Length: 347
Ligand code: NAD
Ligand code: TYD
Image 1 (cartoon, rainbow, N blue to C red):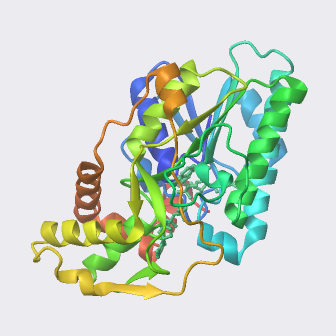
Image 2 (tube, rainbow, N blue to C red; image 1 turned 135 degrees about the vertical axis):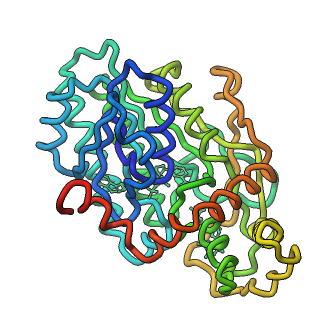
Image 3 (cartoon, protein in one colour; image 1 turned 180 degrees about the horizontal axis):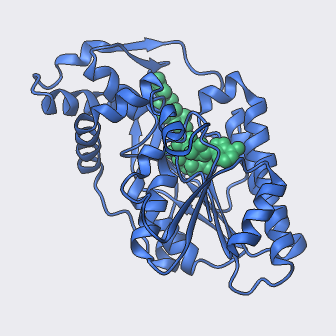
């Protein structure tokens, strides 16, 4: 069972598993919030080894019944509210889904598996943002770094991580937690920096860079993350935490310039022509200065490494959004919400 499989990262994980494991039965449990979009999965939705179920992870009885019906033996949990700016405006929803929703899944897994842990696995997907912020001093987040979340988003994710570990330590539930850096690639909702800015460059709208654009993020191509999830789900040790990152730090302003130049070039405009769209705006409240992940443990233990160079990944990503402008138009207009109604008769 993959939760949040209609979202950005989840859709890549569902696609990878449905294609790679024809003998598995993949159940995608997703509430279809604004961030869930079944159009992300059109190429796999008719596969015999795939089932979509619209459900809220907070619906404990529903999750319990579904787990029993499908005899679920593994959970990859990605469903979450994921955008920091939204969490600043509406922290309640973040606590509800990220904390209570995760707890509901943990309780359901514990009840259904009932001490028969062999062959079972509860894999919780988390973020490096739980570690707080780094200075500009070359330091990296390791698996031992103390949790120090600053935003309501990262506070809720941190809380869910603690619950997952508590279920391992208290009940013996076979859990794994991974903390990953910023992802980018196809199907990311255009509220996040990279797809938002590509869309704005396309329309020649302003590019609102928070503060001075000095903040640093460590970017990983989403398919590399999905591959890491596959590796860890199958070969990771239960009770463990693994950091996932690309050793790929970029200052926001430098990344934005690269995005403008790449998008302009691919649109047949003079590269850099649209740099004057860059507008420095009021900084995000509590804006973490720098994230950077040390993923040495994952490389040494399980042999995973990112496969894509960043410039190559950005080129691929910009090209995808420009080749899929219908997808962008559908999600920015809200039309994608109608898809579920057409497919399933009601939302
Ligand atoms: P997303 O916002 O694109 O997708 C979230 C999905 O979860 C959507 O399909 C949504 O419909 C679903 N969902 C939300 N609330 C739900 C609920 N109550 N019940 C069932 N489904 C619900 O998020 P994403 O960027 O794909 O992130 C997926 C996971 O990875 C999250 O747990 C996030 O914290 C984590 N993560 C994301 C990043 C990143 O850069 N995007 C980095 C590290 C970790
Ligand atoms: P975002 O994609 O929201 O990811 P996160 O906050 O989880 O790291 O933002 C990435 C960086 O870009 C972050 O430092 C905030 C900054 N940012 C802007 O400067 N302008 C924007 O409009 C957005 C959405 C983000």
